[in-house]
Amino acid sequence: MDCLFCKIIKREIPADIVYEDDEVLAFNDINPQAPTHILIIPKTHIATLNDIEEPDLAMIGRLQYTAAQLARERGFAEDGYRVVMNCNEMGGQTVYHIHMHLMGGREFTWPAG
Ligand code: AMP
Ligand code: ZN
Image (cartoon, rainbow, N blue to C red; front, side, top):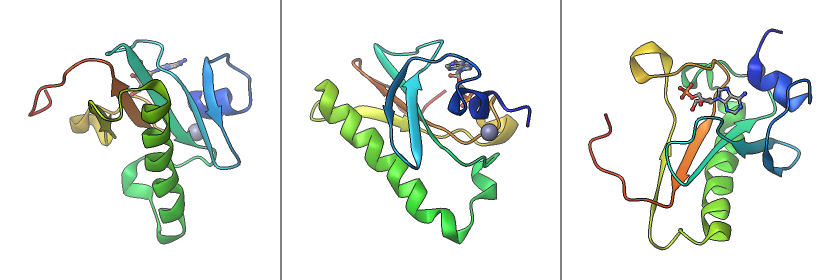
C-alpha cells in the first residue's frame, strides 16, 4: 500500500522514532511546529478518524495515553501541551493514516488556526 506512515512502520522510510509498542509508533514530525512535535500512529492502517470502528477504541485510547506519557517524560505535562488530530481536507489532514500530533514546549493559542 502506498502509505507514507505504513512505510515508516515497515522501516522502508527512515524516521526519528521515539516510542514503539505492539500497537503504536511515535516519531518526531519532519516539520516541527513546536520545540517538541511528535506524531503518534497506530500500526494498523486507518485512513481517517471517520474510519474508526468500535474495535479500534482501545487503540485510540492508547494514542492518547502515549501522548500523555511522552509529555510527562519530556517534562511539559504539568505546564501543558496540545494534542491534535486533523480529519480530511477541511481539517488540514495531509497524510491519510491517522495520527495524533503531540506538541509541547511553547504556549498555544485558542482557537487553533
Ligand atoms: P496532517 O497535516 O495532520 O496530516 O499531519 C501530517 C504531518 O506529517 C505533518 O505535520 C508533516 O510535517 C508530517 N510528515 C510528513 N512526512 C513526514 C515524514 N516523512 N516523517 C515525519 N513526519 C512527516
Ligand atoms: Zn498507512
